[in-house]
Image (cartoon, rainbow, N blue to C red; front, side, top):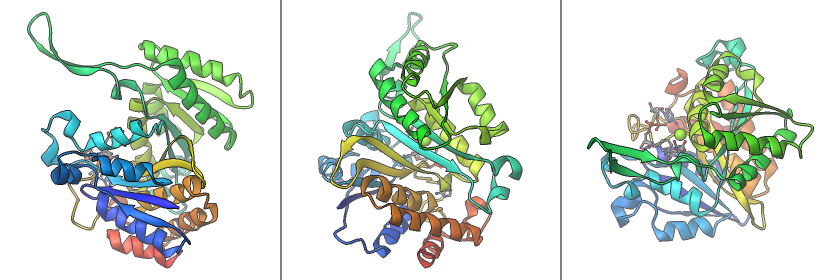
Amino acid sequence: MKIAVLAGDGIGPEVTREAVGVIERLAIPGLEMTDALVGGVAYKATGHPLPPETLEIARASDGILFGAVGDPDCDSLERHLRPEQAILGLRKALTLFANLRPAKVFAGLEGHSALRPEVAGAIDLVIVRELNGDVYFGEKGFRTAANGDREGYDVMSYSDSEVRRIAHVAFRTAMGRARRLCSVDKANVLETSQLWRDVVIEVAQEYPEVALEHMYVDNAAMQLVRAPGKFDVVLTGNLFGDILSDQASMCVGSIGLLASASLGERETAHGTFGLYEPIHGSAPDIAGKGLANPMATILSAAMLLRHSLGLAAEADRIEAAVAKTLADGILGGDLGGSAGTTEIGDAVLARL
Ligand SMILES: NC(=O)c1ccc[n+]([C@@H]2O[C@H](COP(=O)([O-])OP(=O)(O)OC[C@H]3O[C@@H](n4cnc5c(N)ncnc54)[C@H](O)[C@@H]3O)[C@@H](O)[C@H]2O)c1
Ligand SMILES: CC(C)[C@H](C(=O)O)[C@@H](O)C(=O)O
Ligand SMILES: [Mg+2]
């Protein structure tokens, strides 16, 4: 069993170190972890944010544990050399099209949400975000408009098959949960969304037990704050899913708590090949200060064990230790506490 560890930039290495420590403590027989460079650090060392050796190590693994990429020093590089291209490149090259972002309020943290405790307490949802298409991967560039203005453009599109495969993931996810699926789009304005909606309705025929509703993304953003407990599975595209998941994190309490799995269709000897990362970024404002909350990355490691290594009991152990740590009031600054990154990691280890 192999895990590729891609820590990346900013707080990436700080939070990844804690997650690796948790995996090591489980002493899983035959498990190997291999580090590789990614993001701004990889660009600075090799001239590319996703060096071929890193892609090879990622490909040869059963699952990838990813920290974060992004470095303000690199923000004026040509786009293909920017750190963020590494995560986009991995998702695309490895056909990791299904991004699962669960959001649930931990017991005892109801009062730490940006919402009222009784509203926050009901949150138990998963965002199923398409990850290989949309405006992220369409034609883009700069051009000169007829009046001589410089113009930037990014083409948004989805094909039938791209929507169909992510819709199946969402319906299957709903079948394993409360069987409610809300597909979020902007079909009142965008043709891309009209096609999305048509295909989701078609796929729904195969899942008669799932209650399907459609919601425009602006309303979804509002409902996520008004009554987040009404959502079970939220299916949406790449851009809307990116935005709604950061929003959901604050409904739960902090972006430092939300984990994610990015999956495709490749099965290894142990499970489904995937990449696992916190939903947050490299947080340059707090990097190097030992202040980052490592819980999202530790929970991502648990998802890796469950989905890619077939180690459900070990994943449960990690999740229980995280829940216990939070219930015991060991909280980082993001949740109004004073615990630092290593203190939180050590507290999880002590509760494993
Ligand atoms: N998947 C990724 O690697 C990923 C995701 C998002 C952003 N980014 C990149 O990260 C860089 C910074 O982006 P940003 O500031 O918009 O988003 P961010 O998620 O890095 O940070 C947003 C805010 O949340 C805080 N925060 C984030 N994670 C935290 C944690 N674990 N504990 C405590 N506080 C935390 C930060 O301090 C900051 O105030 C950019 O270069 C961006 O492109 C990368
Ligand atoms: C860094 C960026 C490319 C990425 C995205 O937009 O997908 C991030 O915001 C995320 O949520 O993983
Ligand atoms: Mg994001």
